[in-house]
Image (cartoon, rainbow, N blue to C red; front, side, top):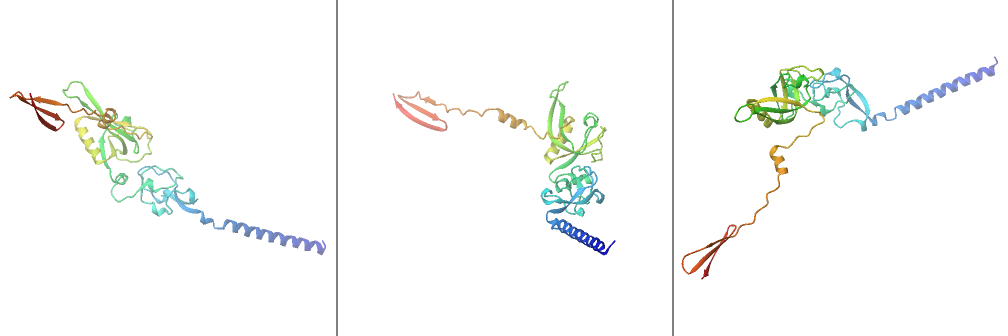
Length: 270
């Protein structure tokens, strides 16, 4: 092998190494060209987080996502969600959002699931009242009451007294990991203070029954008074009647004309 061949081989190696070095620098510059301007840290679930579960460090992790795909109430650090209570079930890979978490301010986790203007009250149930054991935390139910009609006998009346109530817990669990029917002894419902008074009164008057709702059905029927007001036509005002009174004393007669609240008296010479 002559010297000319060796020079060509060396020159080829130098050019090849130079081209590889330049290509590597170009790729690095492209990959590092402001990649953080359009990305941000987002907390996502690494495990399934059931309803009512306190979020722990192993439940979440950080990922990088484009800013225009991140919800406004997302978190950018895991320590901002650890210790909070999940108010909705979250699957693996779901973005952890503020609307699905509640602060745990002490006491039981159930207390953190109650909305600020609501109350939790437990209802004793059996396999019938509890919809055959198919009630789970997070379900929505209606409450009916059956009571005997006035006068006794076998006649009974039933009425839907409360609608679209959220089930917070069944017995002493707020977890939704069960899918098989389980007969329980009590169901805890979330309702307003006014609805609580209605429920307590109904328990004393008759027997309660829970009706399971479809989660997509959030319509409530109006109260009976409002329904009657929407159907009944407005009363037609009646014209004031004209009343005439005649006097029988003397040769002159008095005539009194009444129009509404106005009274007018005149004398007529006979």
